[in-house]
Length: 365
Image 1: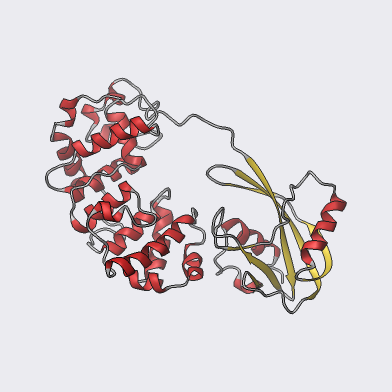
Image 2 (image 1 turned 30 degrees about the vertical axis):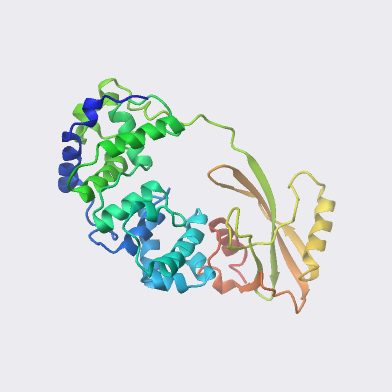
């Protein structure tokens, strides 16, 4: 991948981005107009792979619950995961908690200004580190998130997939070369705003773009083709049988492993190794009774309508069963299990599809 070195040496590029951002960019987002590194960091982590409109209410709730990095570091993992529940990509929440603890223990509760030091902390990559440092400390550092890659791919006519390592390395060199000598905050925000509001994946608003005159994709009629999309792969289909075990208007929940989907969250017990549709129904009944025996005496079961939930890399097919106990074992409430009352479900930190299912199943209890 090559880019005209004259284009990279042209300071008019950054000037156009800065001037546009000042006049037309976003200025009223909750995490803007602050040098508080904690708030900047929190917003950058939440905005990874998540739309601004979805982040805003979570950002407000997080600040209300954890007003500074010390409060977040001192919180329990359960509290952090409960506040994050529904925002998705739960490894971000685990890394967020670990990062806060390291900032407190290793940096005296102050986020370092050096992007290299920031990038060593959990959940902070090179681009996020640069954004935090630029917004909180005015550091002259280059970002290269998905929005910026799209802007560069179109402006410079890059007809290779940006995820290829060699192409990504060249994009980083481009990002570094285009940095302005002054106005790094407006420039960084401007690149983000361009990608989010004008240079969008579909139907970009090219006539309003400050880079339109130099955009090779626009000049060649290839804005729909660039950036080159990742080669498609078949979406794997996974299956799970989930158990809604009910006793005395309460439902049994189990904590999921720290790694994997919904890591660390409370969710419904599952039949280990059971693939819905493969075994005969009589075999499922036996498996249900054996699973439930740990928690109490089996009463009755009812197969509920199956549903699908789509993750980034696969699709999960869920077959739920409603199980009513005839009696609960006294020792069932272990460290990794909890009985949750029906009226607590709406406020509980649960995976979104699990919460939706439980609200439907238990609304009449």
